[in-house]
Image (cartoon, rainbow, N blue to C red; front, side, top):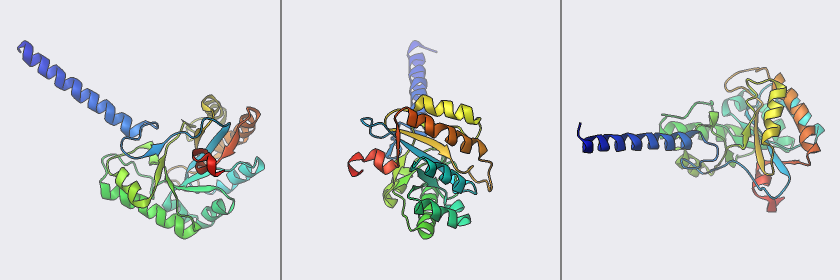
Length: 241
């Protein structure tokens, strides 16, 4: 192979590698908004944190709300349409308790390699189910597994949704409560959006004991550090407090 041919092949390989790295970041990085408008943290000027919970509602959501109520901690719940249809009374209780409800898709699929129409249908079905059960039409969307894909920008635009990722995710579906707490505390900062779960993707009656215990331990520790808790809307738009 000539020197010029080697150069061309090398340059092409580098370009492909670079493009793959850009795509991987766009799909998975919480701080990247290339594929759809999104935020991953709020106002850094105030000692506030947003607690968010994905994949619910579940049979344990009511116990989680009791813990939150004990600390007067509002939260944002990103709910799946399928779970809302399964447990509409619990979905309504979340709204009635003053928490914020976001869209977390209908069936919690991974979006990579899915069609634009599939992605739109997932978001639209969840919007309809959440509004029908709770009277609330979500303003915010969190992608299942944190995976964005082509077509999500248009789906969010059509439905009036802003993407919300996270500053730190607890991995509470696989870590012990002490490890979840340590992870959350390490990422706690002004304006941080913390991601935990009050469900487990498509599971019915999931075991949420690690999450519940982590929340019991985490909230007082955050308060000792001077943080207070806000919903996503408040932490993104402090002038509306």
